[in-house]
Length: 464
Image 1 (cartoon, rainbow, N blue to C red):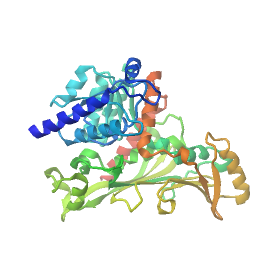
Image 2: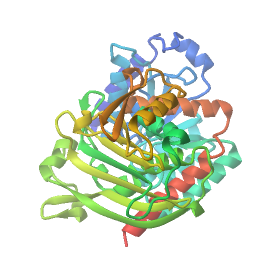
Image 3: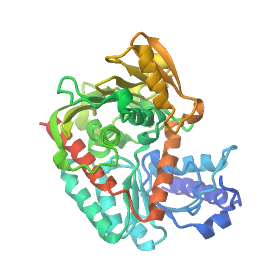
């Protein structure tokens, strides 16, 4: 315990010394000027996931550099503090966060009573998130939550209630949907609404859905230039959540966002068709490789069979949204192939063509946008229509390249390529805009509710 307290004190003091050094943010304003103009003060609660730190990878003009951290003692929040320290000390565009840490056993009650900030950032153990959201909203605090907000069907009513309370109190509850900021996804969305190119979205069927999204993730990965250390609880689906309610949150969100932009969706628009789940098998050596822990902890023994940890991180669902058939699938593997990383596949079937995103070895694991299966027109005629449509989009220098006789690739300049880590800053900046306006777009809340209804309904069906 003395050693742990010594580490905590050392990290905190180092961070504090970096936090008010008089550096400037990207606007050129000093820390003192930022503090005077700040409207937002962050409260980071129990940061057990590296996404909590990514929210602070950059500075924001309207956010105070003083961040109050409330967490239980242990390695989770120390890893968060180490990430913030690395951002503060990097050579290019260093941040200047000043982390003010409280680690008492009553950390959440202390956060709620301190009135030290107005935005709670939640990214950690998902089993606790529904409770944290409810208590934060009841305390009159805005919430910026990493996905997923909930991981069980039983928590869905409390999430609905939290949104209702937030509306009554005039505060915001918002989840971090980074994938809306991936340029290939944005272009897929925009082109799918160019009827001269795409036609109309098909209805599809159970066996051939109109929209399919597949995501492959990896337990062992590099984050901010360093091998990621995951907490042991990340491998417990009762704490992290099964794959079918975790990563699928992004995929379900994208289907809503792309197919029905700015339309209010309701749970009555969703019909679950089928859902399934299956485990990733993790050896003890692999577990040690990403956690640093020699043996499977007691709370994971329930999932150990024949010496392998069975992690139900994989899931698939087929459902209808406003009558359109959609398929979502997520898979977790231990480690990506050399030069690779997490991958995303997406296809939207239109009456005139298919719009496809691939991110495999042929694309060198870079998300790449294709136009496939052009119907009822020559490729030369279609290319002219496509180029004209690209010229109407808010992106310049997009070019078309023929891949084969029935497939085109859209070349995207590097200036539009933003990393997944940097998407967190974009989401946070958008949330800050909503904070300034005092409200979310009217479709966001009902669509978040519908999204979590979809994921938890899939889990319910897959678990039978």
